[in-house]
Image (tube, rainbow, N blue to C red; front, side, top):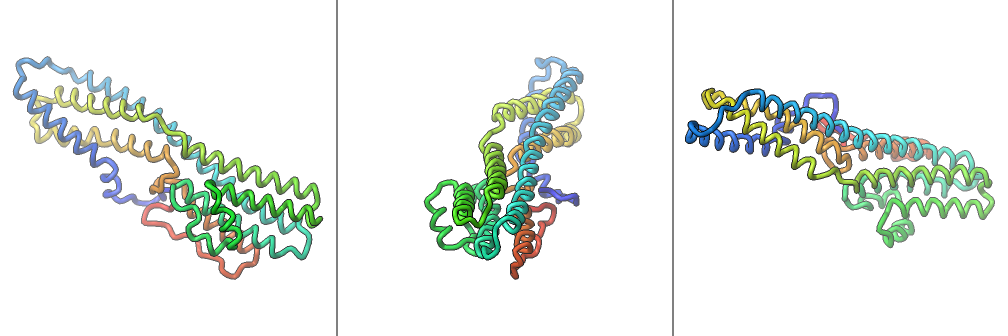
Length: 297
């Protein structure tokens, strides 16, 4: 997630470098063609690129809105995960009978592992990497047989609650309350997976790029009387915001792709680890996840 700080120009230019190169090639080609065949080409009134530019602005506005909705939904999902992870440990400490501190600790550490595993899974990384410090060998062996590792961890939570209930260490109403917490965690996981698997229509981006290049061509033709040394910088300056907004919307619409614009899942998982370990009185409480130069991951 980008921070409210100065973003390096290299990051901005890196996002639109291919667009700028394409605009340069298109403008040079149009300039050569218009110079060679200037007697055959019709006069291009400035109102035509102005109309196309207005259409691009409307399309970009729609895409930015839709992309932000997806990004904001992802952030709300992880906000709910933070709250329900805290709730689960507080419920364990409140509802489970005394003498079960070991299983409360195991489930608390497993919940931390679930948060890291879910984030890594959404980013298509190894979902069990660095979880040995939080999970027992038995848990690691159990989830190794599952494709969906985070869901398997929730299943282990449910099995432990069922064991506590069968041994009368957990009352029926408390079991129902904690089961509701697990249901919310599974729902949050499903919502995140839905965002991850639902692809924004690729044809929309292709169409948008095509109309931006059409805008560049028509604008270049309308500026054919302007010296090329001024025309090219002007075309680049006008087209750069279009490409930058389009690229920003494209990155924002996929909030789980391990980019600077992602939902800060690692930072949130570390916050959950700090909170839960303090509730469990663990000695090895980590420091907050350090931010990058202009973003947190």
